[in-house]
Length: 410
Image 1 (cartoon, one colour):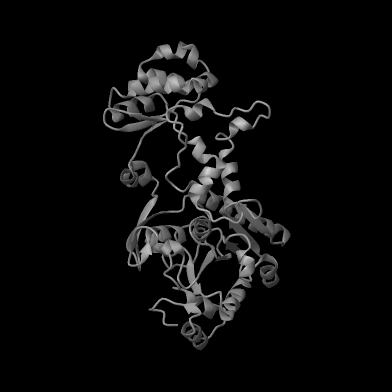
Image 2 (tube, rainbow, N blue to C red):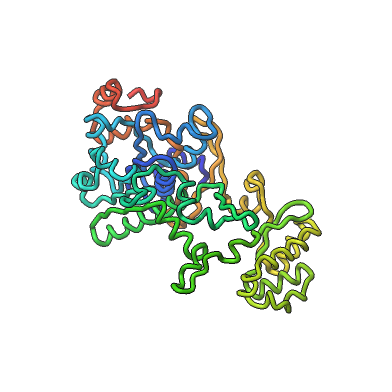
């Protein structure tokens, strides 16, 4: 099923029948709930009347941004003023129908809004209540606002990227903490739903971006601190050159971890003598002497074209690939073979491009269920499902409590 065919169809996927109330904004929360929406959950994005900040951040067309589209597809949209008694009442009625509620306000804010865990669990006893934060509920940073670079700095991720020549830490130029937190949250929510199926009990999931990233980095990025008493503060590999090599006409990557792969690398590059070099005899030797090994590799790869080397490396079983530009990614034969990227028509933004959900289910197919909603696009529809009459909906719109898209009219 293509993305175009799926638009507006009844939700399919392994989470069909699950309702999630999404009170999150920016990236970490919205991407988490989007993943679950792609998998069939009825995700209702609840926004203030001026909308999620991301609606106005980034490349835009007709008042909706690419970032919002790519973080909120497959959801329905409800715009309501939660500072009014009528808005609070509407959300309470909605929560009574929900399986999951997700919020990423700063600690304490959701309680002041009147939707702390005790209140919400009083409305729906077995609800999965999810709180995503930057730093957790306590501690010296708990009160601070947070964006992705702050977590990159505090988690050690920027230090891991330190330039070996200048000693300057570096940020990764994509929002790894935000998106890793989203994936972690989505997995935790499905685990809690699975537990509820067995026990009948809901629970509170608390997830800090900082905790997510320290755990994420630990297997290798913080691996030098695993053995107590044998800490390695600056792993040599961390300060060595990376695995990007310049060729005569571009860049490629190639890596040899196992002894068999290293033998293939030496054969492909025409340097069998490296197999006897005492610096490179074992996996550990090659890690300790990574700078020398990668420098020698780079000198050889610079003598011919990318296509030449990739063919030789592949023939010897060495993991390798071209370093693609973002434009080249879209048209690469492997991406096309995976049927990964689709185009469809968004009613506000026009023709757009999106990747399908990465995980494929053979029995309960997931997919893009619907376009990312306009602000308040489904407000009237959702309230009608809760038993509000057309007259009541019109009155809430007139009072400035409920936001609807112009074509809805209430």
